Length: 145
Image 1 (cartoon, one colour):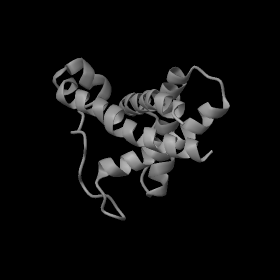
Image 2 (image 1 turned 90 degrees about the vertical axis):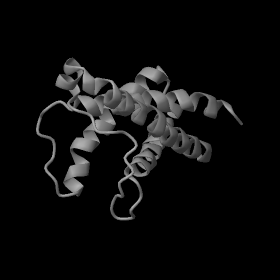
Image 3 (image 1 turned 120 degrees about the vertical axis):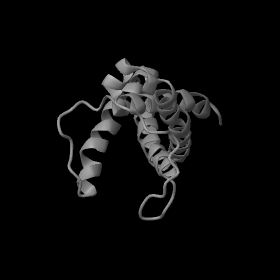
Image 4 (image 1 turned 180 degrees about the vertical axis):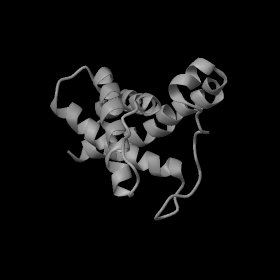
C-alpha cells in the first residue's frame, strides 16, 4: 500500500506539471488565437502560475501539483483494486471527479459561489489530460520494484 501511495503521488504531481499544465500551455499559446477554440474553452490564462496562494504562499502551480499528487493516490488506489481499461478510466476519472470537486466543494469551502450549471469544458479537458497522464506515468512506476 505504501508503494501505491508514493507512486500515485509522484505520478499525479508530475502529471499536473506535464499534462495539465501542458494542455494549458497549448490552449494559451495556440487556442487563444482560434475563435472556435475560444468559443468553447474561453480565453485561457498563462500556464505555470507562480502567484502565491493562501495560506502558505506557495506558487499556484505547486499547489495544483500537490493536489494532483493527492488525487494521484486516489487514482492509483482505484486502479490497483479494479481491472479497468486504465488510460480511458484515468481520463474519465480526472475529467469528471476532479472537475466536479473543483466546481462544487472547493468554492463552497472558500465561501465562493458554486457551480452555476454551465459545462466547465476547460476543466474537463485539463483534468482529463491530468488523469490520462497520471495513468501513463503509473505504468512504468508500478512495474518497478
